[in-house]
Image (cartoon, rainbow, N blue to C red; front, side, top):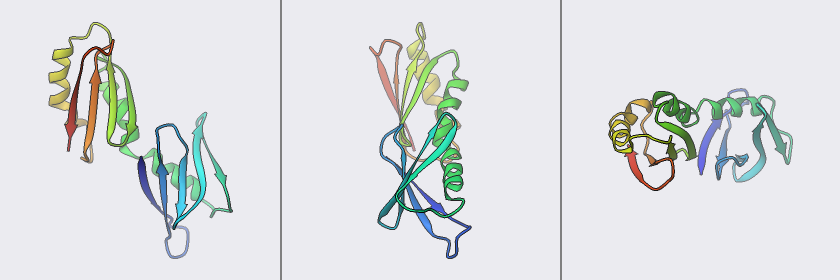
Length: 147
């Protein structure tokens, strides 16, 4: 689960909304107080809102910007770019868990040393993150936790 807080600067009193995604790929739930007022999802590059009531102007745009600017969304691309010859796929299960699958014919022991020694440098704002790294046929794995 990922939970963000959005503060609306356009509304009087600067109300806060919880923005929650329970599982990767699912819509983001928008919560005002203790009431779910709608859900947002990005499809084909565009954000859409399904709301149970009217929402303030600019809310969808503001929340979309908040979600897209989160570092956990950018980290998979950074990992693939930095270890281009090693990494086949990076899947973020949540903001605290990433699954990484290596390419075929990778020296998995060498990558384990390289990855463990450098992954902390790619993370801008440290938070506890668990990386589960698998070889190409998923027969071997290792885990790195960064705080």
